[in-house]
Image 1 (cartoon, rainbow, N blue to C red):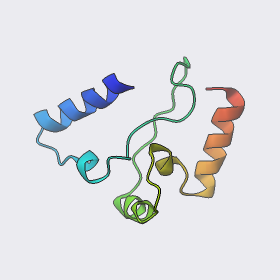
Image 2: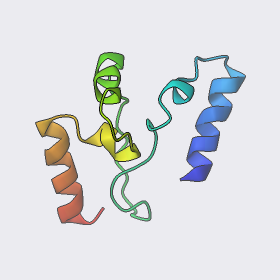
Image 3: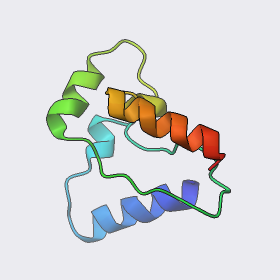
Image 4: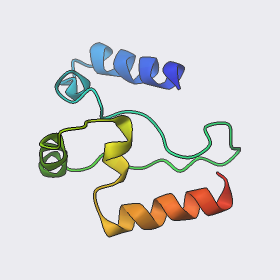
Length: 83
């Protein structure tokens, strides 16, 4: 996972993109089995959702995957399929 994050940071630097990871360091990571042959790539949540989640007291990488009922369904499906 470290290599993926470093690649993201490289793209941000090379293209002079705003680095949201500096404002929201918890907004990276993965759910499920990172060694699985199947990966789901999820889009980043909207800035308003990130701001809402940032008001919580315990900020972790898992927070971004636990904002709605749909997030819970995805988490359950990934767990059940062991991916």
